[in-house]
Image 1 (cartoon, helix red, strand yellow):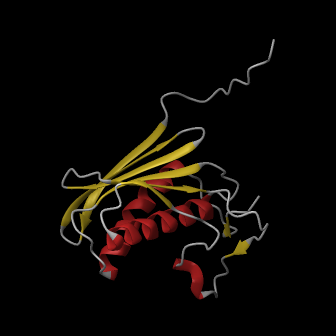
Image 2: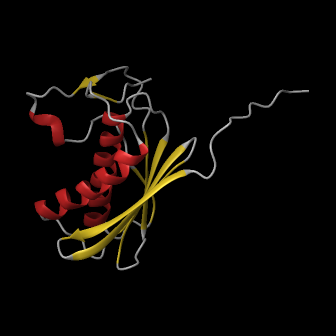
Length: 163
């Protein structure tokens, strides 16, 4: 008889919900942490229309990126993270913006928890494709609030080590 590996994880899953204004639009962000995935939904006006996943394991190149304080790359998503739209792209511009958010959020997860090997699943429901810098940073600030609850800070600043 084969043995079954049973993982003792707390139930219910760790989750967090925050809401705020992003460029004048009420925005709700919910995150739930599972053993194999991190689920984050970002919804405006009750929408949820695009799903993207980003494996946090990175590329097979074995490259480790360091985010040094003097580097200007601090806000750029890590290049080894590969977002994939699962369904609901909604056009090229909306799909590109969704993948940018997914890559940025995955990078932030890797900064906080560099050994994390789960998959980020991002559900996105933006009322409009807002390319304004202020909206981008407002949304990421709200995401930081849910990540701060789910993941411990990492003071080293290492971005997801590749396997």
